[in-house]
Image (cartoon, rainbow, N blue to C red; front, top):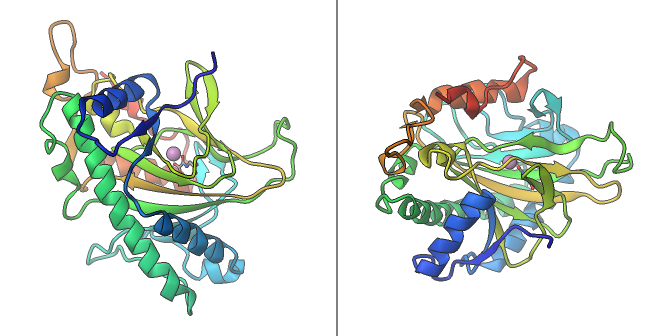
Length: 310
Ligand code: OGA
Ligand code: NI
């Protein structure tokens, strides 16, 4: 039997049926799709519309709002995953921190359409991802707000527009680049909107499975933080994006990340006789800074959550 990434209706997220389905999906896949999420389909259509419009602008114009080492928000087209160049362009939006971090906006009239849609969708993703994290907290035996408070105030969550241009090499060619090479997401969880063009694959038991595009669903995948909190009950699944020879692909992930000073370690509820903590305490600032350095430059082996195993 060919198994697919589970699709879960979360219209009643606190119901035992939904909680059980999420627990199972986190254990078996680290990935699931959610329907009944309550985000307005018009907003989903608008985010793709502004994203397509933005990436269609000339390269020189996009580079005028290029991100840099001081302020990572903006356009970028040279990202590396594990020291290999990804075949994609991105635009990252995160809130201003009143200091160095500041959103960068496209020029001219595009901004008038772009900014309100980005801000509205960011707010919807933030709210929905915190509801999902509360459900995960309950499944891990702690109260619904035990994990979410680290994502209030100066949290480091961000929204990314991904554009994966078609790539002329045949799918079987070894030199064909990935849109994103295999990786796990380092934060708590990721909420991803993908268009109808397939490309996202998740690895389970050594095999790659396509995450089938569905117009009515958002994709959820758990990140390294939830893996640590769960003491390996849940796994942050390895995933990648394959490019298509003829078709472009667009996706919009929201990465739920905590405040810089957050530390995390396996929750006490996951420990017991014969079940020691499998990770030492991790500082988000330290982990994130090491990982981000690898996005910019080939600095040798990229830091992975496994470096914190004990
Ligand atoms: C990512 C990612 C998947 C996609 O940006 O971390 O895994 O479908 N994206 O774009
Ligand atoms: Ni990812």
